[in-house]
Amino acid sequence: MSSVKSGKSTAIGFVAAVLVIVILICVFHSGKQTKTKTNPAQTGNSVSDTVSETVVTTETTTKYSLVDPSSINTDFSCFDNCAFIGNSRLLALGNYGIAKNVFAKVALNVSTVFTDPGEGRSVPVINELDGKQFDKIFIMFGDNECGWGSMETFRNQYKKVISTCRTKVPGAEIILLSCLPISKTTSDKNVYEYNINNINNVNVIIEEIANEEGCKFIETGVGITGPDGYLPEDYSADGTHLKKDYCLVWARTVADNM
Amino acid sequence: MKKLISVLLLALILVSAASCGSGSNTDTQSVDIEKVALALVDGLPFDSEIKDTENSVVANLDRIYEVFSVSADDVTKACFYRDMSAGSAEEVAAFECANAQAVENVKSALGNRITYLHDQWQSYGPAQVPKIDGAAIVVKGNCVFFAISNDSSSAQQIVDNSVN
Image (cartoon, rainbow over all chains, first blue to last red):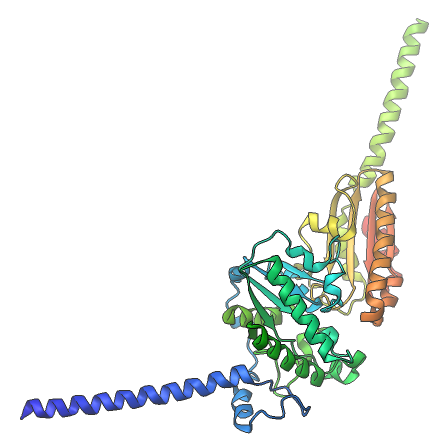
């Protein structure tokens, strides 16, 4: 009798455990979907019109939570065998000593990376990869291409950057970084059509490129995007380039998702 | 006797020449370029966080040589503060040069840097261009100071005050 009872309670326990696991999987899955599929700072342009309302609501609670810089782990030795290629926003990672191998330049874009040398250097930025070995190469472009008439040109050139990186450093994993948000003041100035809507549109394209090229895509604005979808005004002196504390938050996001 | 006087006179001339030389060295050595650079950072107006010197200093001397295209033969000591966020062209640099010719070489390199920065920022961030065009190059003995700020017109005075 007692063995029947214990068998029954074992079965009930088993069913309960399975139910808990199923619920946990569902919760985890919906959270993961939010992280990879959306571009929440979108403020009404066409590219992400298909994003569902539920997803946006969940996103609000994750991406729009500003991270306290003093609370993060500042050990970035994980970047030691990585390279970063991109525009001026990346320069801060090198300048602040967060990453060693930063190949970037003010005003650089997916075309000029093949022609322009970095500050004080003699070869085009992309050629800095020649003869070097890296485990991962992070690419970050898009800010300086916001005003380009053709996003197809951007897409094609970006793919050319990826294939060149693959040729120069065979075996390195290529990871695409989204453009960071900018402040509302900078967005409203709209210099060269550099505004938050265009940045968000470019980010959707970058994520598409990542999918097409089999690259990982990291949404880098997590932790530094305010509830309004913009970079908080005091995070940057010019509304674009991050102060050190917020560079650390950004770098942590990259490090934790690489 | 005449020979002895000649030798003494020659010795006197040599000693005088040597002391003149050491006098000019003292001029250079008495200029603490780090102190003067900090005075420029402190005294000039900037938009960026460059005044947070702990985070704006470029500690790597080779990188300073590279950025300014100056040689280690010409520059014996240097310090460099810049907007590390890369959001502006604001910077302050100081160079202790090996000799008078090295001073000229550094001045020429700084002229090239102004041109480089002007061209770089003209289309990307036009608001920086007046700052770059108004850059200050101040020479004090064998030391050269360089500043790009919102208004670098007082750089000469700041250098003079710091040295004196």
